[in-house]
Length: 222
Image (cartoon, rainbow, N blue to C red):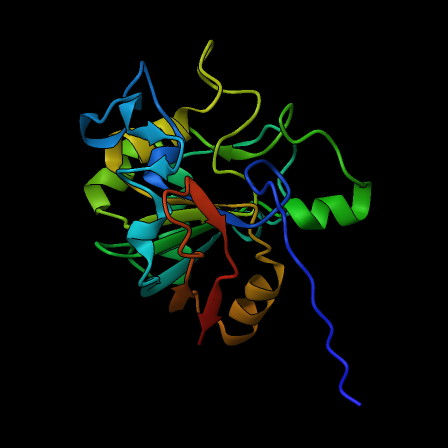
């Protein structure tokens, strides 16, 4: 006799737990998002412009792991630590790489190693991340996509009165999709084993019409 098993999924993936990609329609600043589109693009059926469906063919490019804890000689960054342009350029020198146009840049803070040792905490209150000044550097290097084991932003925010400056500067100003809450621990171990910090990055979001993002399972191939 035949036996079928089936299930259905419902997930609220934006936030601080699930690995996901933010589409350019995820965030608005003063009523506008990338390329000056206003909140009028929000419709009952989703985003008519800048929805995740625009990335239906996936993302395939050179990936670069920037392992800041390894750079600093620690297992993980402390809560609220801020990563600067100098840190990233120091990592380039240490790893013998040069971040350039079209790269997918993955920033490791060691978040999940810290959680395994100390337990979970409220990531919205304290989290290691990038200083907002890094956004100008991302523009100069023409990075295509950025991701982190956090949400790229540091908490508390280095900018008083602005909670998510990196999200605003990348999604709204640069038109750069973000990957949040990635588990970079296995990648970091393999990169260290091979002494190689570049790889083929592949990631395909779900083709959700009008979606503001999608759960995603990126793959690094050495």
